[in-house]
Length: 122
Length: 122
Length: 122
Length: 122
Image 1 (cartoon, each protein chain N blue to C red):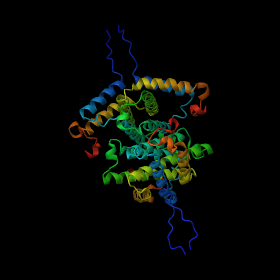
Image 2 (image 1 turned 90 degrees about the horizontal axis):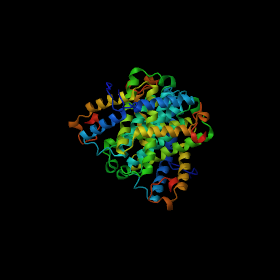
Image 3 (image 1 turned 45 degrees about the vertical axis):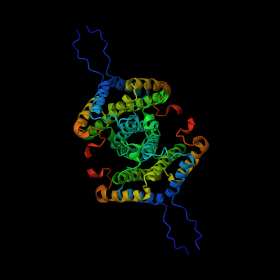
Image 4 (image 1 turned 180 degrees about the vertical axis):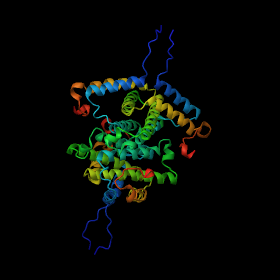
């Protein structure tokens, strides 16, 4: 007998919770992919604002309160991203795996080691 | 005995793959949170570009090739988001759960049903 | 004798005011182009947030208070853009004229009339 | 007699050229403020991408070709910003002057000298 409690995959669990959240509020009417892409861009803007005046040293050593705020901004990005993917029938985890595989080809270790150069200029 | 093969949580698996990807290329030197927040904002911009001239109807019914491109842009956002969270020691799934709980309080069903009004103007 | 009071070009006037504003506050230390590009992206995110849940009809007919808020967000984008251009020794008006000329070639009237297709797919 | 040729204000001149550009291509149908705000966010994303892996030193000393590319990205931001302002009947120069005056109040020299702290935390 399996005594280990199996947890649902976090992306899947969040996607379902978001769908229920929207349904309960009758928000699907607003959740057109165009709108969700905008909302995601807005949240990405808020995230970047936290770092805009920081040195690299400061950015890598956020005070706890800032870090908690940043965590919630990251959450906002993820939530809108998941909602967008859901509305477009995109399997986000599968897309990420696919992109990682593409990146591995675009950025072979030998060529890209220690360099931030874009693949088309490698 | 449990015969079910347990899969690692997708966010966790991706985070680990990304860390290995960066380590193999000696890219941690570039992956300061400031830079990663910028990269995420850049990808959010690319995502929004796909939708900028579309009607709602078109946005909700993307041709297959566009949808595949959008899926990879979504992947880019997720990958930089995970990398950023990793560098800041943020548990992205936990942050998302916390934000969902906060949103449930900010947007009570009774007040927000059918309305896209921001919580501070409800 | 010329009795007409000649006004300084608005972009030039704003650029100079911004430089004085920063100098008075000893802010040039923060106004690295990297930081200014981030600040601009943050403001663009705030701008987009105003429109994210609106229909086209609503976006084209903003209430006066929203329009005033949007005007100030537009101002923020312009101010950071001018500051960035200044720091990079870019003549923003000249760059815009150059880009308009490039766009006229990329989007010939005959090919692009009534179509929002990107030039590389025309 | 005034022999000096008076040039039209650059923002005004660009706004008019953009309106003519769009009219010639029958693009006003696409230039809803919602779409233009998205286009601006997309361009801001492209701008930020140029700087995302750079050190401050590198960002302040761009190679000439990168600087030219960045100039055209800045131009894109300005062009969409002007188009958006035009569609919303916003006087961009006036809004920028107004915002500068507000900023002068929000960031008094004595309090904000040498500090990048946001006004609400000063």
